Length: 445
Image 1 (cartoon, rainbow, N blue to C red):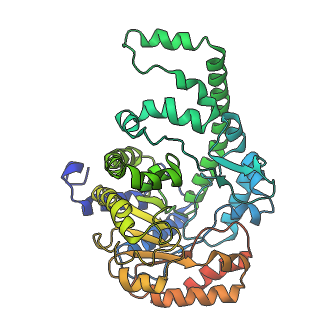
Image 2 (cartoon, rainbow, N blue to C red):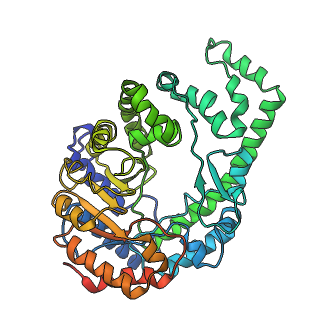
Image 3 (tube, rainbow, N blue to C red):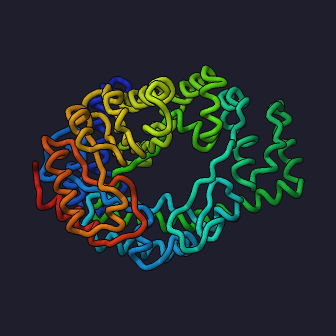
């Protein structure tokens, strides 16, 4: 509801977005450490809002490209923080206290290793579980967790499909759920469930889930504490909810790369129909979660749309049209799509420049940033793209020079956020400090 007491559905998308921006600026339930912290918070959020709206500010905002880097900086490993939540807290708070930050996120994607082990997670390898203890990145295990002939089953009843098909393949703990009977009368269902619960495999599954849930909540308590500490100190998050491109929704954890590219040739109509069908469901989920996250930006990692994965014709048939429908629906609800274009989007720039002005944020990984500014700069906010290799192995002077060049060209006229091409897990901390130094020195361009 707005001050004029109009209903939400009566508002224009611009009015809805302003309401979400106001919530971002004054997050409900947050108690700032002091008035100075609140002032810093609003200043930083306004810097990002102005960039999204393609407006100039006192300087370009900066997103330090850190994934699990706080662990490295604190002298511990990814394995340490996945299994020791005190070390997780110490690492994140140390990084927060010792770097100048425009934005920072809690370690919500650094999942607890004990939980992953307990449930038999087949989707990932992580340190000590399929990978050496000293590695600093987890790995996704791609597979066909949804079969080629199961699109209709998935669309007809996603919850039933997840419980009986997907989860038993993805998490071992759910294997007994394959035998759930979805064709029961209401009066019979409770008794059938009670009967199933007498089976040893179901009892074991429920005990495992209960124990894993308690462990998950111990981890989440620390993550939530870190999140509150970050915000209360005056540092906003620039990531609210998350979503996936319709193509990636099926191509990542369901069909896999091999499966979905086969579908493009063997059952293209089925694939196109399925992608259209999940768009309204995605929007409903985002609306339902909007009350939890004060930030209106929705992170959308783009995994399979880059120059090397598919041709331009395939991109314009399978990837961009359903993604564009999703983006327009999100914009219509006042959200700001935050598109992380992984890989190269050099041949895509002209194609993706057909969204309303000042409505999305494009974060480019290996795309030519100067060409991106030339093509998209008058229409969309762009972010990127100091090479991760440079941040990991380069020298601060070289980093600073690259930042100054990006700010001078891409920051001209507003609509630019300085960040890396992708997150880093190791490297010289002075390389990160060089980024904020460059932004401070440049000021408004």
